[in-house]
Length: 143
Image 1 (spheres, rainbow, N blue to C red):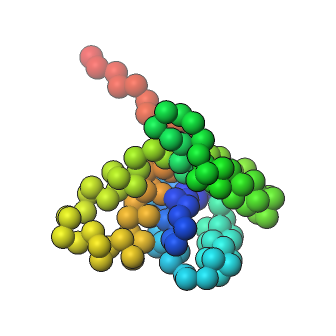
Image 2: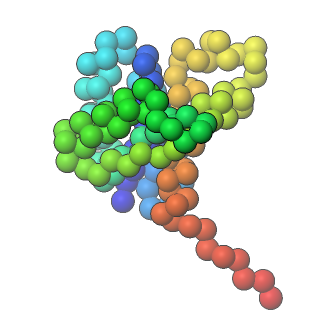
């Protein structure tokens, strides 16, 4: 099984890749200015990576309610599933962008943000969360 993780943003789409080993790794973010070009590139990545399933961050509010961004993610997921004919899963992404950004020195965050590195790190956290759910770590046996 092959998985693509997505951190959906207005200007950038963060990407990650994982497989049955259960480890998510970042891919270069999609940073094209034209949204339709970003979408076409996303479809190409899904095809080239031969993804079996797609995991998209679901930006719920801190009180578990769905705001406008969550509804956008749901609509995006539904449309993407129709386009690629693959299962698309939504995973709670609260605080993933914050966690991804906090791993970068404050002095470098401004430059790094535009590159999409933070977005792809967030996508990696989203995908890793999903992989941890479907491939739980074996329990250690101690003598």
